[in-house]
Length: 225
Ligand code: TYD
Image (tube, rainbow, N blue to C red; front, side):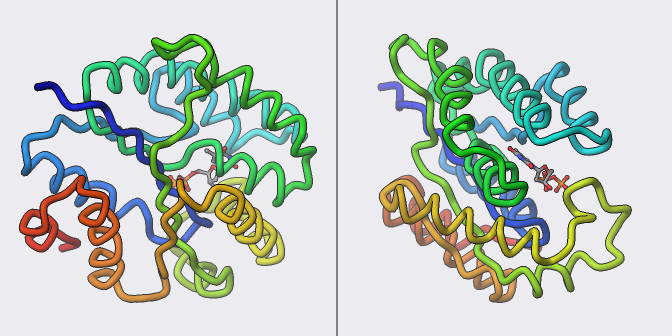
């Protein structure tokens, strides 16, 4: 019997450490026979990766930024995420629409109602049910104090337009994530990302074991190297 697809997204401020756990989770799902599609936003298709380069590097206002991000998202949904879900894959996506509400909305102070309108436009009409607005089945939120994230990022690489923002920006982004999580508690799983990597991995896998999506044996064998 074919299993239904799962759409799982990973969120948190820059430096929260989410990226390093996504591959581990992909390996855990593959170990129990699932096909996994790993992707990221902005990005995930040739067009969306071009838009990502612009969004991360070229100066622009918050509306332009939001339009480009949602354009990238629609292309990604249409060409990667929806086909993968239709095949029954587990889709693990590094960031999705919660990031837009947190960064463009809370961080840049852009109108949340406009973002909701763009969300509906960009995320509807692509699934088999044409009226469905595609949203994640689960969003894993790596919650970390902005001051700690800034320390982890310091000197790591040349910062992009977001990483170069002051800590106050990330305080607003973190609050934006907290607001999104409070508005959709059944979709969000919050992890305490201040703990060491192994403990974060344990928190992460226990979420999936509780949901019945990962077997406890598979979960306990994997983890960060
Ligand atoms: P990130 O996942 O942090 O990539 P990397 O680990 O390679 O730096 O994402 C890139 C940046 O894009 C990040 O700073 C957050 C920002 N972003 C938004 O501002 N809005 C969005 O909707 C998305 C998806 C990302």
